[in-house]
Length: 126
Image 1 (spheres, helix red, strand yellow):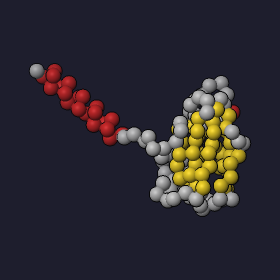
Image 2 (cartoon, one colour):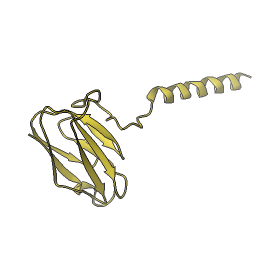
Image 3 (cartoon, rainbow, N blue to C red):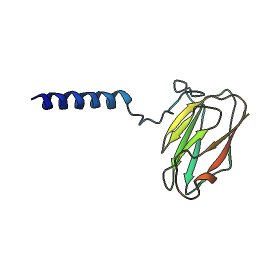
């Protein structure tokens, strides 16, 4: 009887812990620095990722303007982490960002095989 009660308590605690973590199926980044999910984007930039490369070496967006950044995985499972921000996309996610002028490097943040370290590009904000 004591084992059954302990089992129920542990199972309940595990379920509550998993539920508290939540799920992010809508594509919001894991952190919000530079993210403005509540603003309506004025444009969208699509970043396509395939086997060890992004479809462009650089992407350009306007400064201080809400822009929807979307990641599309063409081949394999990839992500994006933008240096100098807390913006991260995994899989086929998107988020609205508003960034100050500058050049932001980004890279694949999901280990994806032999060419993973070469998956780098630049986000130019003018």
